[in-house]
Image 1 (tube, rainbow, N blue to C red):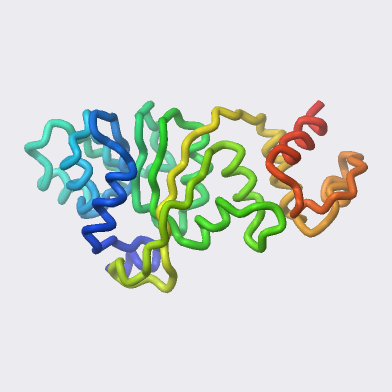
Image 2 (cartoon, one colour):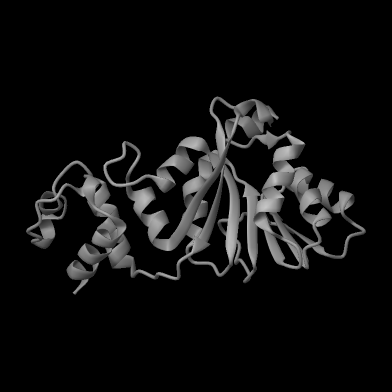
Length: 235
């Protein structure tokens, strides 16, 4: 367990929260993808709720062996030994997972390019708060804007750190995201990234290489205003 704690991976021990997570994901009759099933404690509860199919993607070969042994008689589950960030993800209905803190951002940014109905994810509480932050909030930044452009984001509940093993230093949170269908060019994404590298500056100063005459502070911009600026610069 010590190794996983260093990597940001902890294991949810609270059965009520595990059941709540699956209930919120609405997996019955759906094709479901689980990110990082670990020892299968969430996996079992997903299968208990009768999905059409479950694809469980696990990087650690030790857990893969355990999962294959544990669920060998269940035809609905496909266990894939792969890194989620590098694997070509098929189209699914629902994505679920208690994701490691240290790769939360890369996972969210990968999800924006996938086809699915919704995802329910356990993430670090501060990360979840950043995803739902509004203009002028302390936590408002690139993650907030980008998340809200590509997804409808719901903060479902806080999960206390005592619910995990090993006990992490911080609380977690359950979020639900639904794709908005918005697509941006790489250039437009880069403009938004450049803006929020200087969120306390004016737009004019943050994007001085592009000749934008806008004296609003970046931290005050709504997602719609960010999209408008990115589109104007991209012309």
